[in-house]
View 1 (cartoon, rainbow, N blue to C red):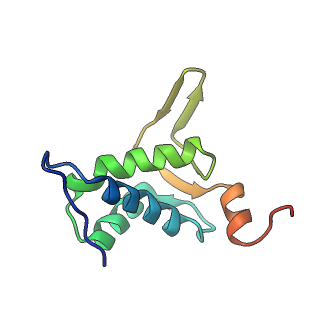
View 2 (cartoon, one colour):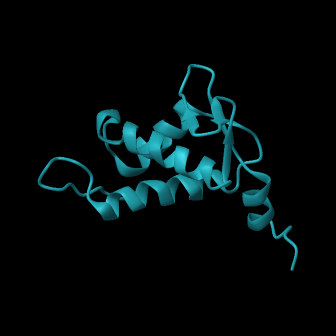
Length: 110
């Protein structure tokens, strides 16, 4: 179990924000089925032994970044021109993209 470090302002330090997004990617890379967003958030909280208030915004932002880079997909993301929006709803699920699973399971063009 890893620990997160804080800046003097009370926000996560850059290395901790990087650790959160890294663990998001690590956790999702081997999944073959959609994962409820709440399960993903719980995994991060458990992995870093921290409260939801500390990491929830960072998890949401990290998932949004991974969606926009094409590594994750979700059922509540709208990619309308100039208005990319990721909303977390009760039914939100997150899945690895074909690009991510292809790389993880060596199904990419060489």
